[in-house]
Image (tube, rainbow, N blue to C red; front, side):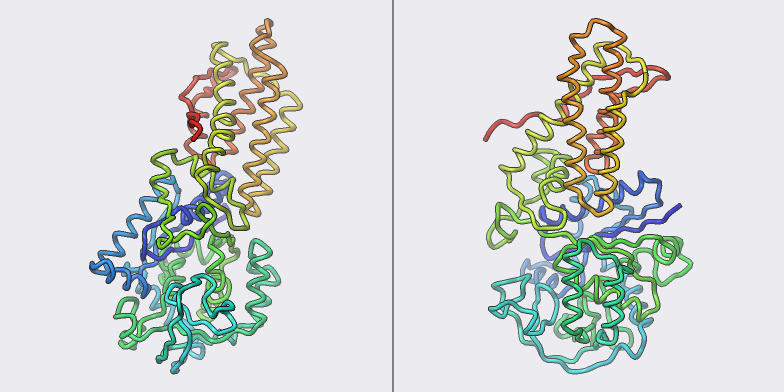
Length: 491
């Protein structure tokens, strides 16, 4: 059985989760569920990054102990995963001892020629936890990820990783597709960074600046491991690294057919450049693929506590339900680009696509089938069979390239096809019971396939539909079931 390992990034816990985080969780979940449906051995990891300096600063500002602070926010992320019905197998926290030991083991496994100590002076973005060269900044000399926030000029003695040594190797790795980066635009961005020339990067911070918060550098009590060096290792420490006897580590890292990272575009440099070089230096297998998604804005603006437009996914779920939020994020946000969360647009999608679309079609078909008492299983008509096969192929092809919105559009094409058949064949007006049963059987076949196709995207909705279609030998009985999506009043 093919082994498939998939991970989300691990978000900082300096603040509570917002709807932008939900996009990545849901995208990864769709991939995991789809691959499981293809009978692959899937392992799905998520977690939180807790060792950052900015987590320490946020805890100080909140006036509580840093461990208490990160535990609270980490728990909030776990709540969101549960509320979104995410099927992750494990949740890793980087303050766990197993992770710290694994991060130190990776450090010790790094080629000794690749680590060296020097004094460095540079521009530091606390938000990114990264030093930047002037050429990496915008025209105002600001970080692209955190415009408006001044960079600090920092001079300190740190350990460095000899990234420059891996420049040509990394270029070949990515340009050849040995490490597949989707979409192409992100692959080209990474190659552009490499072609500008890679600089060695700092992989530790002095204890004075980190306040001792983080993973200690092995053999040097005055330094802590740089948060990104530590954080990236979660993908293997969660599996039991460095214990090669760990079943999870052997199966899903050393032997896995696919090792896929689902990440946002702001951290592509770390995952597509730093991480492969670190693994190569330590003599470990590399990820095979990285899907890089865009950002979610809120009502057209960047999500920001300062602006006050942070949208709590738990509140959205409480008001509208889990599957409607999953659907909106996957259908409305372009897979490869940035997209916007708007409550007006959310409610439009809810009413048109869910209440009037999937919900209405399901109710019509189940009601027709229920009125017959029993529907005889017959031959699927040629046009229905061909349409279902066409849509299944489209969905599979789109999901191979992580085009979630296009996959959903294809499923809704099948829904429209089903609606057209109901309206054209008018089974309620057919007096011949055998003919009526034949028509309804084909409609049930369409609905059953829609439920199957929509399962990775909206698993609870899929379950509600399939539970109403009861196959009993040569016949089908249907329950009317509950209303899937109550139409929202116009605001």
